[in-house]
Length: 97
Image (cartoon, rainbow, N blue to C red):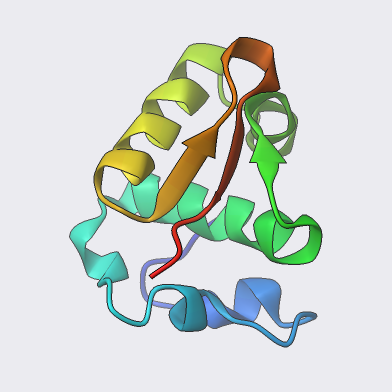
């Protein structure tokens, strides 16, 4: 789980990229604790696979499908992610800058 006092980069230490690399011009502090924790959790998958589907995020986080969709919507609206595809085929990636 996300600890707001820890460095979010530790969650993806196995990758060359870090959440801070992805959000260099965005402040992760603008997210609520729940949004930040969700973002950090899914970031590792996006870094390793290039994208994530909502179903994968549901399995990873244990959150309901509705809550996962809400969190993805917030992250897209705040400019952290981009959504492509529709319905069950929708995938989320980091927004390119």
